[in-house]
Amino acid sequence: MEFKTDFLILGSGIAGLSLAIKASTLGSVAIVTKKEKSESNTNYAQGGIAAVTDQTDSFDEHIQDTLICGAGLCREDVVEFIVKEAPPRIKELIDWGVNFTKSETNPNLYDLGREGGHNRRRVLHAKDLTGHEIERALNEKVSHLKNVSIYENHIGIDLIIKREGSDKIGHCLGAYVLDINKSEIHTYRAKYTILCTGGAGKVYLITTNPDIATGDGLAMAYRAGAQIANMEFIQFHPTCLYHPAAKAFLISEAVRGEGGILRLKNGSTFMEKYHPMNSLAPRDIVAKAIDTEIKQSGDEYVLLDITHRDRDFLINRFPNIYNKCLEYGIDITSQPIPVAPAAHYICGGVAVDHYGKTSIANLFACGEVSCTGLHGANRLASNSLLEAVVYSHRVYMEISRNINKIKHSDAFIAPWDPSGTTESDDSVVVTHNWDEIRRCMWNYVGIVRSDKRLERAARRIDLIQKEIDEYYWNFKVTKDLVELRNITTVAKLIVRSATLRKESRGLHYNIDYPDTRDEFKKDTIIVKE
Image 1 (spheres, rainbow, N blue to C red):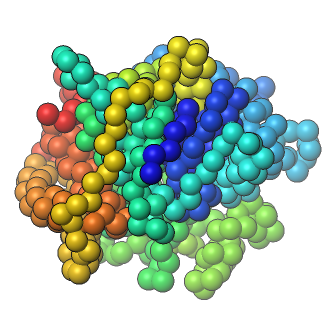
Image 2: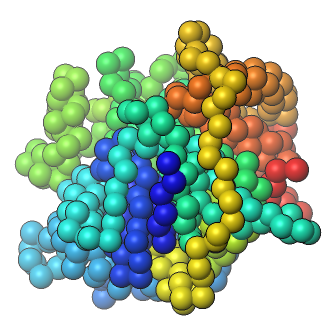
């Protein structure tokens, strides 16, 4: 079956939903989302959204904090316009119904948090459930829009690219999409296709990301021939709850922002050895420090201690963290929290310009799936939601300028052809390869890397990819198979990018090249041959 829409948005996080709200004023919108519409990385964002809203703060200070964190790879013009365009985007979110936490002392002001790398309090939040609150408000807004259709439990398989004559890059006509529940593959034809598919934390064995974060948009864009940038910069969140029964529960950086102190199991502090900001150092510094201390001590975790703060304050400020930890027998008001690093955020992605345009015509990318130049070699805490909402507006500005010039292509799009494939009776192949890739990436392409580790990872992933490709074309497509194919592709991109960067910078640390080198003060760009 073929569906026709003006705008095809893949993903339903803050980038996809905020864009859908605006694009619906220009034409029809189809949102394709893998699970329920609220299931996204946005939904799990605890900390908040960074923006200059206080009179004692300034754009210049936010810009400088971002540039310092980005370790020389931020695009300064991008950092400047994102920071300066933040206030109207924040107002927009509030107008759409997002309830940020107000100050207890002045109800006319918002309570501002502070996180690692920030020299001021500038993080708006909804207690410790900011992403959940944003998703709630945006979903409610979208539900009342007549021009928007949401296809839940659908997953993009591949982009549809038309190339003519000497046009090697081509332009995007839409995507093939799998209806997961019905096991049917449909064609979605669109004037504009926008990737808002989020990140790829599930490429790693231990991650703060939900199960849906399998890098689908990244892999689809790469296969289509789009430029991919800076995939070596994987941010490991330093403080994921360490408990055998807990699955990927993040302990927000805001806990350290409110005075949380990192300690070894024996109670001694250690961050003073690594950075003058101690426990509030940027994430890459903290993650590497914890990784180093764990390996030296043989312990499996360190402790995050916030017990010196008032009990009522902690319960009110961090209700989600308090209740979740309590489920595992940890009272954060009287006990330190066992934490360890986990894969969290990809600073690289599909390369885009100032308006979200990729290197393929009519294909845009927005949010974590994209690489705008804001984050450089390391993302400043709480800049990700800001980037998504500013760039969704910029994508809207670009498509609104050109919507009347673009017509639906009448080019023939072949329907998906499943002939020659059979139902798989050997799902263990998918399960085994999924586990092997994630363990391989965790062991060899983690916080600390080496040439030897990267070589081992490359060899294993090449073998797995050949096996998956053979399997993929012989059996009917399923969600599990699509996701396995995608995490393999993303893993390969990360390894290849990390191999190309012969230095240590930001989130990429190679023990064979421990210093930062000027000749690598540039983006790592990969395009499928």
